[in-house]
Length: 405
Image (cartoon, rainbow, N blue to C red; front, side, top):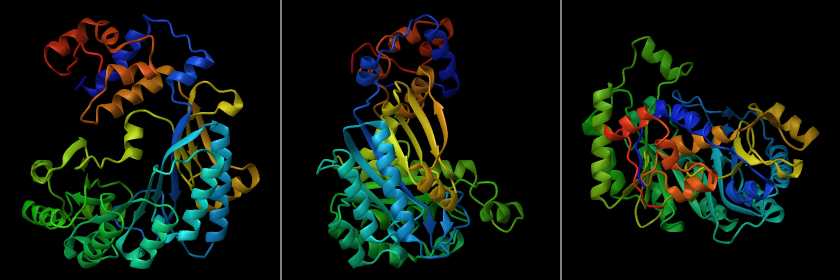
């Protein structure tokens, strides 16, 4: 079943439908329908060589060599939260940041070892490491492969040196191309590249030129991201002062459409709003987010969604770790974890996330996957609950078929 719907109508349709149903969640049902037996695992490495002018992510420039301390804290928090979740299987691992390729292969390997000691980490589980071209060398890529990394995501962003300079990136187009070449050799079929559009002074011509060069060299996964000008960043200040300008909405829409067309012609399937894959090489880890599965967040500022079964929990919790590295490390040393905020999610909260994220994908939301989260309230029930929703369906703001898949 494929569905498209106005995002603003999602809370309305769920609340109305929920009021007409009775929800009874025993521990057995929670275990069956909320995927409590497995989880994806995200590890946040908070450090970068420098902060790019467009970036508002939770990242910091490392001023001292404290890798031994942060490694010990990542290991401790991983043990604590996996034990808290009581999951029997970790489906995928993703090292993000920041720039996790600044961490030593020994640290990455130690984390994977602790994960495998705390829960089942299958030999074929997807293990992704984000890398920047300037923080990686041929020997280090090989070493990361040897400790268990089997998928690489490269922050290329552009293959135009002028654009890279404007963004404050520390690598050149040549550096990026060299890294792609080496990663494709070591991780064939499992090398992803990130590239950005809507950059300052970027034209449709320069964007298409970057894509042509990228497609001549890249592997089987590409992520496209439109530049977002975030308040408080260096880029925001430069644009506000008139020193820089970015393409307008019409131009960025043309860039996106051009990219979709070029990627499709190169054999890529757009399986999510920003993500394209060929030969079936989708990101299993990211897909677990979009399908509403459990995930555990480790490290400063990491987010998680899982049931704390060791505490007797039956509802999924939204958990956020302490942002800053130093306070986070102190909390982990004292308490075993640095969780700063815990919000117990209602059934409605979970369903809202399932709808909002599922609608980003090309498969939409199937009746079968919906029933895993809502065994007593089907999609058809929701759409039959309101005259307004039936009218929206007639106007084709969303589509719903009658099949079970």
